Length: 248
Length: 93
Image (cartoon, rainbow over all chains, first blue to last red; front, side, top):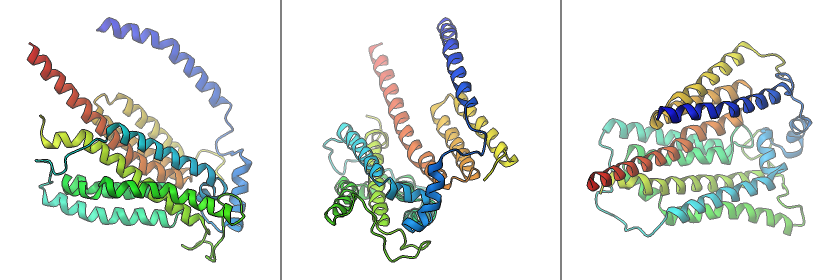
């Protein structure tokens, strides 16, 4: 055992030296700290507000200037989760015995109930104001999914199972990517470029600003929240539920 | 625009380096998930200090919700596999 460890250590040395040299070579070529060299960032910072009525330039890039890339990202997530579902999901008998996994501590249940409300609100707020302040559909979607996960952590597996049901989540996940794509095609039909932003009447810095970005943002939030919940549901069902049911 | 490294930025960079080292030295996977969560939160603070709140939010969501759950599921699976293997070995003996 110790021999093998020693050989591994010796073999690792040249690789470590090589990577270390590459790392230092790369680091030495970086611009000095605080001296940002990208022109694109300055352009966006100056143009996002007048052009797209968005005070959060990052969201303007994600859902407008580079909205097409985000469509690709959504399909990456969709395809990844579909892959997980294909691998893990199989016909399961509903209502198997001993699957409740109820949390017995009253304190934990109360804390969970309080945190669930707070987390859900924060998630929805992060999504809704993505055009105005930091946040958006991606981050907010994960937070909403995390809030739902609190049901499993602080209530019971049975309650979680009802929330994260396949029949409810699969259509929502499909709708997320679907709405995004349809919105893009709708702009084409209207004679504008793909995913063109039709600016609405909302004043910049308010909830209604940013034009059609908000719709893409909410479509993304649906997709991300549902995709995460499907992922958690499959993992919990495959790996954690057997432990709750008791080892066979 | 920050031209030089402020004490706050230097401090959090040192903490991030320490956190990353701690993750590597936490050998038990379960403990590593917790240490990695703390390391992730340090990164969140770093991104906030470097004025990148959007990245900080993404990091926060991924490091505290999505990543630990997936790793926990994998650890649960590995542990149950190990115990099953041990049981089989015991039966063979």
